[in-house]
Picture 1 (cartoon, rainbow, N blue to C red):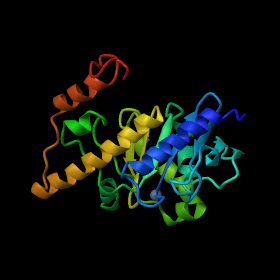
Picture 2: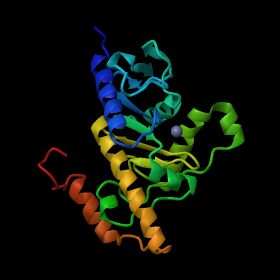
Picture 3: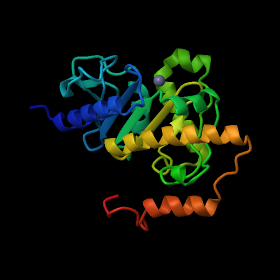
Picture 4: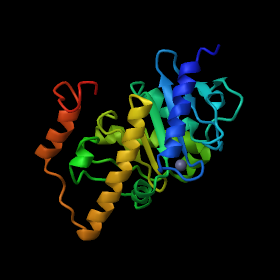
Length: 235
Ligand SMILES: [Zn+2]
């Protein structure tokens, strides 16, 4: 039996749920899951339909990008996921989609500011948008450098990636993460909703006031961290 059976199964389930979530058209999305102890991650194979995919189709790679199990070619975005796990081993899962509203913000090269408590419950402040990739970076290695630019942005902004578990890549689309696949999926769904609401807010008023900091703090900290009290104690 494969020593990566469980990792492949949770990755497969995540990809199936992503296919059912309404966030992706065709095969434009991928979920990976990371096992920090073994130093490997599993990811969706490239271009395979969510309906016909099986757990055995998942591709397992090490942190050098070498395939350690699987026969199919991994997702074309694999190197971006790889850079994120190398930089942030605390991430258990990374998801990439072209979900419509979040992608609109990427195409405007705009940060997604926190305008309300729906956002504050999941993202502790602005979800940043990265700069566009340069021609040289693209020629060198598009997917690897996309990952490096995400890390550059998180570092420059002084963000804890678990406190703001998403990023908008300029001109492209969001990458979202979490400590588990389910958490990363939930964050992807919420990002899409808050991006849509933020767009509507902009229509009403181009100078949308940010959510006051004390309300942002309250909503984020009642769900996250040592003093969290939302839910049934399993968060
Ligand atoms: Zn993409």
